[in-house]
Image 1 (spheres, helix red, strand yellow):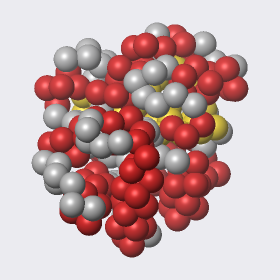
Image 2 (cartoon, helix red, strand yellow):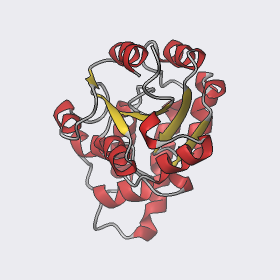
Image 3 (cartoon, helix red, strand yellow):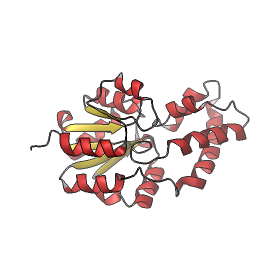
Amino acid sequence: MPKQFELLVFDWDGTLMDSAAVIVESIQAASGDLGLPVPSDEAARHIIGLGLTDALGYLFPQLPQERYGDLVERYRFHFLARDSEIPLFGGAQEAIRELHQAGFLLAVATGKSRVGLDRALGNTGLRAYFHASRCADEGFSKPHPGMLLALMEELGMAADRTLMIGDTTHDLQMAANAGVAAVGAAYGAHPRDNLLALSPLACLESFAELHRWLMSNA
């Protein structure tokens, strides 16, 4: 069966890597370290996928930007203490390998920094399977379409041959802004109903379901 899409663009945290809980706990711990109001789990999960500046502006609108550096430093302290132990979702490594072997172009569009994504690609052994990637510190943060547009330009791919896969409304809205179809990963950071409101092609409840859907429908 001919492929519907040629380029599959994955979000990282909460889509391929089971990191949402660690991100939330690291944000909360960093806030406590600096005597700031500790965000709820829901609020902290909402900012997963955003670049750090946008995320901090959402969580702490009254915090002067000159204090962002201190908060980022404490967040990184807590996150890096656990970073090497964060697993991929079960079956993710095999799925990425299989999609690569099936001839798809694979890319990553993430709210992580370049340093953070490079570290994660190295830790997981997935670097060789991805043809390109874009990070939040290299341009506009989600939901701006910049990361997707840059990936499509680099890989010579049209919007109608590109599919975005992500677990947050930021991912799905970025796809809509770029004129790209999307699939929601409802096992990640944002609630299923919020993802469905953005009309993805599908909204899957586990990584195994996502893998099956991609192999049958992408």
